[in-house]
Amino acid sequence: MNQLVKMAIRDLGRNRRRSFFSSLALGLGLALMITMAAVIKGEMSGAMDTTIRLQSGHLQIRAKSYEESKTSLKWEDLVENPVEIADQIASLDPVLAASPRLFASGIVSVRDKSTGVRIFGIDPLSEVNAPYRIGLIEGSFVNADDREGVLIGQPLAEKLGVKVGEQINLSINTSDGDVNEQVFIIRGIYSTRTNAFDSLTVFLPIAKAQTITKTENHASTIFVLLKDKNQTDAVISALQSSRYEVLDWINMNDLIIKTEEMANSYMNLFYLIVLGITATVIVNTLIMSVFERTREIGILSAIGMKSRSIMAMFLAETSLLAIGGIVMGVILGLFAVGYLAKVGIYVGNMGLTMLFGNYIYPELTFADALKTTIFAFIITLLAGIYPAVIASRMEPVQAMRGGK
Amino acid sequence: MEVTKIENVTRIFRVGDVETQALRGVNLSIENGEFTALVGPSGSGKTTLLQLIGCLDQPTSGNVYINGKDVSKLNRNQRADMRRGTIGFIFQFFALIPTLTAYENIEMPLLLVGESASKRKERVTELLEAVELTDRAHHRPDQLSGGQQQRVAIARALATRPSLILADEPTANLDTPNGKQVMETMTRLNRETGVTFVFATHDPRVIQYARRVITLRDGVIIENHSGEAQV
Ligand SMILES: Nc1ncnc2c1ncn2[C@@H]1O[C@H](COP(=O)(O)OP(=O)(O)OP(=O)(O)O)[C@@H](O)[C@H]1O
Ligand SMILES: [Mg+2]
Image (tube, rainbow over all chains, first blue to last red; front, side, top):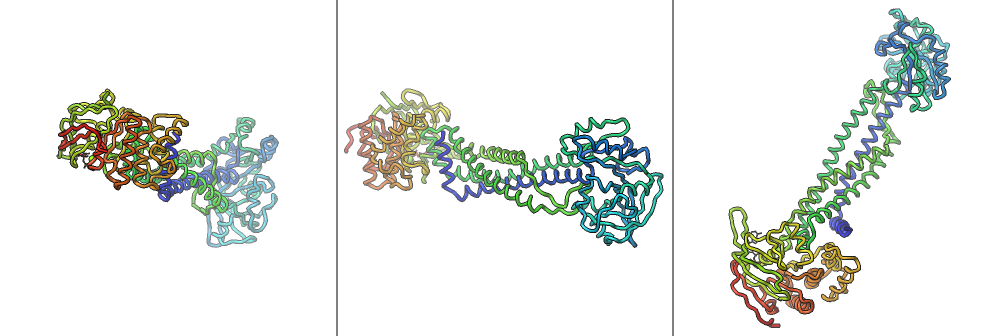
């Protein structure tokens, strides 16, 4: 009956300020939920993108026995003839670029300071290494035939107190279990704006990395970027081989996916807490309104309005408050997300092994916006049942007794 | 035919350990078309009796019949169904819905019985005319005088053409001229439409409009006097 809605609207209008502030409470709660959802999504997809770009790629081809955590350099753990294989892979249509990489561990020392690093032997000309080249902030990129040049990250340069053109001493593990030591010149300093990566990674041209580690014509992995990551499965099936295994970005970045799942379940709890608070505000408003209107409810009941309709009238009020709150919440939330997505949220070096960028750029998906909005509406409506039931149980005799 | 019949009705209120016998065995029968006053000192049980007749409350013992139907054992919702369309109420405190205009207040019971839009319009217009408030149709209760509010309440009580209208001290909050106008409106509508009115009152100026006066004391009827109205 639309008369009920009309009465609900006018009742809310009777106490405009109170209605507005109850709606606003829900609006602020919802805006917070929307913003948090976008931050988590932005953080996680940012971490995934960064990791794919800097560390895992979309696909990697490795020897079956290769163990990432040990950075093994034994020949049997490496990919043989890597350039040839990389060229073959690069010729596949969905592949953007493929390039060999050699990983080794080492220690950098300058004067009295030294620190553990990982060595990335890369092909400086390959497109897969563009993110590092773009990140160059001082000096120049290494050349493929450079025999004594390295690139180091900005946080490492700061930590060691070194500049472009200065020398560093690098000790690197070799395939036969020895350590080779050599003085290198810093050709350039880069920043990928990802502290966890930059403070640890030193780049060498792959040819030099192979000679110093005694792994000529071998690579730890073939690093592959696709034009579209949804093509992953198609490319994997084209690459099956008996000697090597193909890893994709999903199983290489299991931790990020697990973390996102965990974050999402915590978010649901967070939503419940936020909505619990806003629902309390709204229930409180409605209960006040029910008790103020005891007589009025009694009159409606006396002239024959059914309990069900009285309930419906209060639920209509709750719905209106909820809709008002949702409209405010969505607007506020969009503004907050829009602003933060523009300026980014600085998180700096969180000292995590996961590659979060230094900034989080919130990312609001339609699904998240819809989910939080529906969640907010349902919880508010459920909360509204209680005052509505109180109203519907009021006795009509109240109408006859008692003053105004 | 009788609109309502009351047999051996008692109503006991319990508040904590205190028991109040508001009605102690009342027998009463009211015929169609009556214009009857319920009088008696404060606390004698007038409101309690009106509530039982009006299906707002249930007797502790005894039976209440409305149009021949026993309503004393009905549950909440059945009583709401019984009230709707059969019984109209006029309360001491006017009791209009403050957010609705005079027009909408009168329309409310019609909406509750599911009357069509055109029928509602026709009926509300007719009633506004009957209580001489056509020009106040779109005023809210707080924009009306007490007497005007009570006339809206009368119109609302009449809206669904109920068989019985119960009024609890309808003039208690009105000054003499307004009280007089309300009583005259009720008398006229009783005469014109034949609807039964039962009203509780203390006011001798109101009692004189009644054609029958029932006097209560301590929850029992002590006098039941029929005659001609004195005005
Ligand atoms: N809900 C209740 N709970 C407890 N006692 C009640 C209740 N309603 C009425 N009573 C008691 O029942 C008795 C009759 O009350 P009732 O209101 O019917 O009297 P009344 O004749 O209408 O009085 P008045 O002229 O003052 O309106 C009183 O003693 C009153 O205190
Ligand atoms: Mg009374």
